[in-house]
Image 1: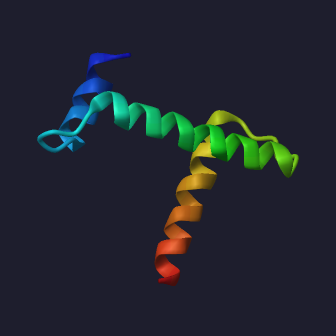
Image 2: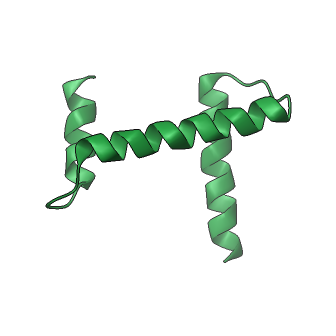
Length: 64
């Protein structure tokens, strides 16, 4: 993993947070998204999928 990415991740963690736990959670989240997309036969590039998820989160937050 690139040092810049590790530095960005570390800057989001609070005292006592586990980097490994954060990464495990991120992997589970991505696998869940991929599973949902596969079940609905959605094919996107990695960048399209990332933007799709960001937009879905923005939209959901605006609705609250």
